[in-house]
Length: 195
Image (cartoon, rainbow, N blue to C red; front, side, top):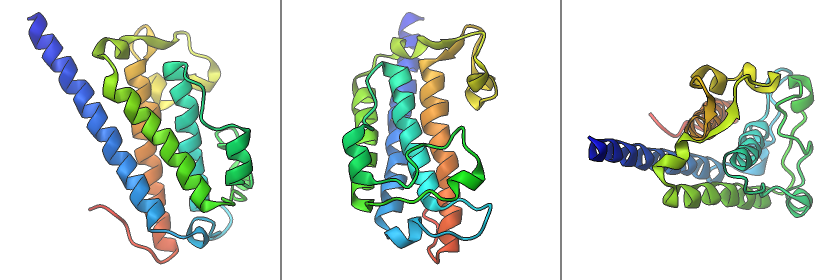
């Protein structure tokens, strides 16, 4: 029975690795098939530009990875100066009105930042032991900023585990924003990327 559990755990980790890499490949395909004018396009009030979804997800991924691993975020003063975001904030606690103004300054630098964040995650997952995914990263009771999140709904009785974090904060969150990006690509004359 113990070997069956180990096989199941290995299968789970392998699936997580493959799904994260596949999702990252969608982001690479998206950014490589858009120009700065596409990502910074402002459609109308109430509609966030693609720049928001790209930076929000990448920067939240970067910050969430710190909670999951204690490895400091990639985003620092050097990246701030190079990428030149109009709003140096992922926007989780800001309004739509504020984040409508989000724009990327240097698109190539943003793509390099995104790649650094995603590659670090894939490298970490390449060597993670299944047991590490059981670690509780946010115990119950949850602070208000977590209590209303999808990860809180997924959490077990002890709290949010590392697996919950990888699944909710990195994978599911990434797919949610990829859906926004694919929809927004239609507003700038580009098609979707998957069927």
